[in-house]
Length: 144
Ligand SMILES: [Zn+2]
Image (cartoon, rainbow, N blue to C red; front, top):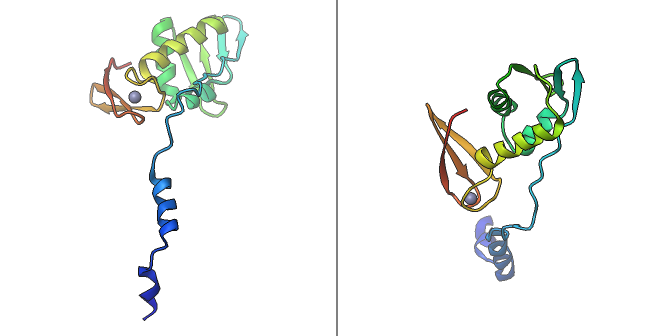
């Protein structure tokens, strides 16, 4: 029988495996930094060049972040998939945009229980829940 050897466990190897199963300690010191919006202006239009990068950092769909910005700024605009940029039909400074994006992160990304950004949005019809992968907490959200 060739399977005989498979029942002999190497104690050290087993221990090693157990250690690997223990989750890494939460790296609470690690900072969650959102890239600053890189903007260009064409007349009264603002283009956020690194829009996809910003959304990716927060693990959110660019369309969702875009919808939030348009609502907050009460303007119209579009996300351009091919370039990953966002066009706003209003002139907004990069720092104002950054503040808005931070506010978005606070409400729709950061877990209010543990403060980690490892979350996702669970949508059940009009019910939105912010689910944290780090601590498991759930927080109802206001749909955008
Ligand atoms: Zn959490």
